[in-house]
Length: 457
Image 1 (cartoon, rainbow, N blue to C red):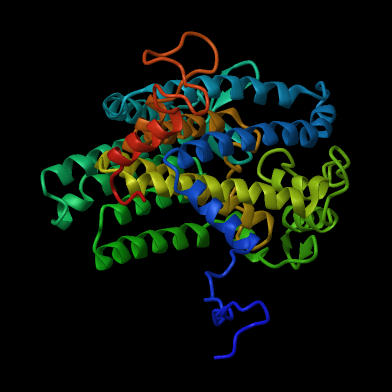
Image 2 (image 1 turned 180 degrees about the vertical axis):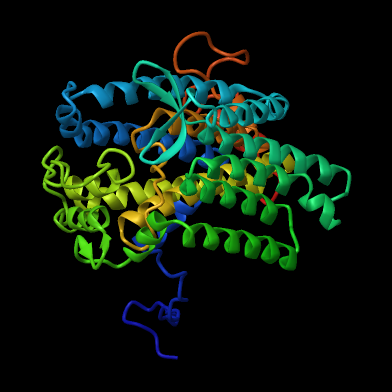
């Protein structure tokens, strides 16, 4: 081998090999999706969704009630903030009920089931007593409390059916009785039909539909056989069809589906059509808060049953989609609480409350959009009406209590350290690089993972 000029042997150069293909770089979209998925799977996600979503819906509802009710109040020679002040008072009382329900143990919720049911039945019977019951818009489902305050007992019947039905089915499940159809139906269905009968005596079919949805939700969660479920549903459908056929007002509402003119033949579709007009004139971002035209006497019940139409006119598509997103988040959180618990009562009660709120929201919004007949039910937590707001906020408190009671959520809440005030035993968090007590989030992760159950990742 010939040497180099310096007399040194030539250097052997290593043959370059092509670099091995590394793992593909994560793009920003995938990283964002992973973060969202981790946040979605955290133990307190359902808790924050229920608490934050319900409060946002209530606050936005107060704003829209104030905007939509001013003209109606002035037409009645009342101050412009009259309906807003009443709704604000109901929201404050409802917030107290929500806080109380969220702090109650599950045993106390179950103990309240029978008293609430008995009270609801008693008040619903009082509605039919002459001199006590009050008729509003043709439906006698109200009790006058004095002055301008009235209460609708059928709204509390929804809460009563949820609590009592959940407690009944949970006790039967503990005794292994749900595999027999008679224990599945009795006495749940007869008591539900009794409540429906008391409601229909006053002519309020919208509330009866919501109560039927709660009943079917409880039966579905209890694992009712398909034949049994379809049979009960068919009987209820036939009764509902008979009630619609025998009422000219209900038939007129059914004939207004898809109407584009205020007068469709011999049927008056003024409310349904002007609700569509309000939504159509809102555009993407609306005409501005307080700038609705339809609320100036054109749209009946602008601050109650058709407040979603005024929201679409003033806040546009962006506002209505925000409301729908909040209800969707609330519904998902309720389903998550019901699916991850090991307590049968919590599962049935959370499922019943979620069915109640989502079914009522779908029926109200579907009527405003012209997809469903006008049923006369308010938008939960959003429309004006203290009788509807109070039991609904108590039901939201139930969901919050159940979300806090999950093992992983309990562990996450127990290790929280207040930012201000006295420090917990165990010392402060050491500086970076130091030694001492473990960091708070590491402790939380370890305790939560040890307590996770029912399919939590």
